[in-house]
Length: 220
Image 1 (cartoon, rainbow, N blue to C red):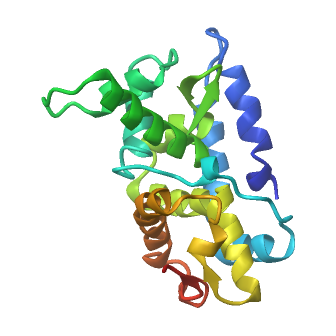
Image 2: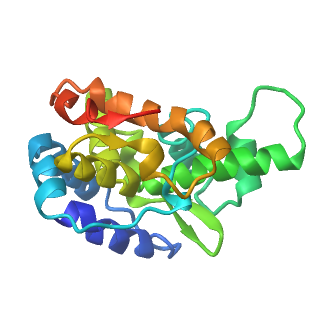
């Protein structure tokens, strides 16, 4: 399934690095509509039957404070600031605008966590430690809320960690702690709530009943 390989998106991402490139807005909207028109059940079938087993590393486990900051809001900020490429500290400063004083380390950490989560979802891309809004992220704030929700569910299913967790449920219950054996206890505890937040988005889907899958994913 081309959506999982991101072939088309990566082609556009590379072209977007050229300043004279004209982003194909209508074409991209059509691409998203086509993705959203594929029943979620088809994505689940792909994960269960066609997806190869991929090892999960610590860097594949998302960490964020606000999922909106790691998705639509980050894309909007990068886009409207020219999409010229930003480092972690600049991402943090774009997102943390509540008037509180913070040191550079806090901006860097917040920026890194949310940029990497957005990258896992395919909404930003990273070149030489610099983040740019991706072809998918460039358009996400221009589609309606229902389409955006449908797309986010599909992007979550495509993310490496969630894909492999779902795939593992084919054999029965999955202990997330055992699945993420490479994490220390403290790191696991910090990231556990993020995984639950992501899975909650799937649980609240109006398109597909994920309960038979999600009930097999056990947090200890």
